[in-house]
Length: 305
Image (spheres, rainbow, N blue to C red):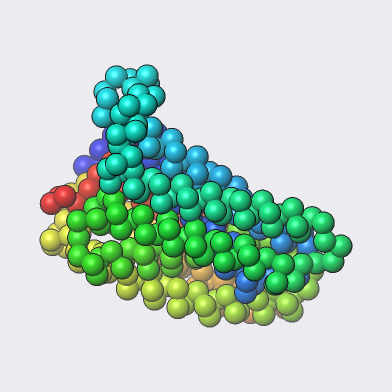
């Protein structure tokens, strides 16, 4: 039932993964810089580099994907990707609008990240929140541009306004959640176990709200995209979606173990290694979720679309 991607589709799928990673690093990295940091200069530097890397990969994936679409339309192999007349013509289409929004968003995030990193390495003391306020504002604008682009293309673009709002909320919740995992992993290297436990508890409380938004927005999109629950196991799109839901449940299970078992035990164990290992498992699970998401949004689609 699953479709084997062509070389063009596989390239587009990898580009989509870069797009997702870039969006997640911006949202989650900014979220943790704002609310969950241990004050260590090393933490700030690594998270800013994480945001810069994500913005660069997102920019690269968006640009390459545009030329992949040019090549697909030309059907002339690799040389067809660089048909500048066709590339210019497609700028006036929906594809051009979506690509432009994403490119501008990632350029804003990349530029602000580089400026913030340059400022951070010159500081003699750990940076204060005011030191990266511009980065937070810029990443918020960048995320809104990229999120808006999702309402302009793909299966969602032909659905109702409710579905378009749902995809923005879903993207925000999912990107913030999975994008926070790497910064949280960095926090587990902190020697201040009391502070680590407090930050992890605070994140767990916020994550519950994020999951509620994620589930609610996802349900709204499912109602719009599928005519019947039967499609979840009778169509390639439904099977891919079912696999994604299963992987999300695994990720939620790992997150629940973190919140209910491992975080309360940090002080008793005097060693956050079990929490660190659990976060790594969670990161592996969400990587698989992203791969499946890229697959069904690139290779397959709902039966009626």
